[in-house]
Amino acid sequence: RKEVEQDPGPFNVPEGATVAFNCTYSNSASQSFFWYRQDCRKEPKLLMSVYSSGNEDGRFTAQLNRASQYISLLIRDSKLSDSATYLCVVMRQAGTALIFGKGTTLSVSS
Amino acid sequence: GAGVSQSPRYKVAKRGQDVALRCDPISGHVSLFWYQQALGQGPEFLTYFQNEAQLDKSGLPSDRFFAERPEGSVSTLKIQRTQQEDSAVYLCASSLVFIGGTEAFFGQGTRLTVV
Image 1: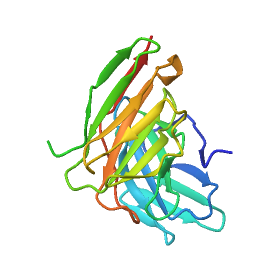
Image 2: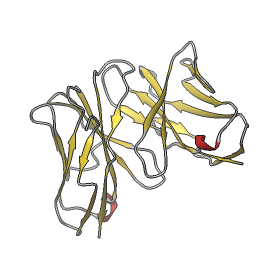
Image 3: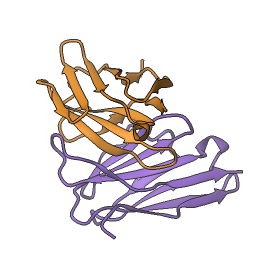
């Protein structure tokens, strides 16, 4: 079993749609959680950190459920510019490796 | 520049050749990570440094892969006797501290093609 698992998609949605991505992780000792975004042939960039209380950044909402070892990302009012691969990222333990999921591809169309 | 710099950007190697990939992290960044990303896959963890100490090398796929960061700044990933399955983009990332939710900044990667 992979340490971080995501549905690879692709998710094809129209502009304005709401889309949700899910991610599970296997290491219960994992400390920190993130969503990164990667555009085609570009390097990954931090989208947002994920906290147990849930956090929101504009149209993006991230949730963490430690008991279920489950992370989610919700994108509201999708824009064409949201088209990218979204990577779920887990830090194994404090100060150690960042482990990436395979990524979920989102394509937003007009 | 202020970002993570990797060189070369592209490398074509003949099977069996040794290659060295360089990463210049952001100045002052303590943590440095190497990843391998195959087409259509997420970045696969290779190894992690905290300053000059290699704290985790569990992701290195074989003893042909070797990484170093002798002065706690620039890092080199070396691949000996390259094989076709080594073809991938090799990404380097650095972060300021090593505890908690500090952002990791990535370089643009080195695209290695083994022919």
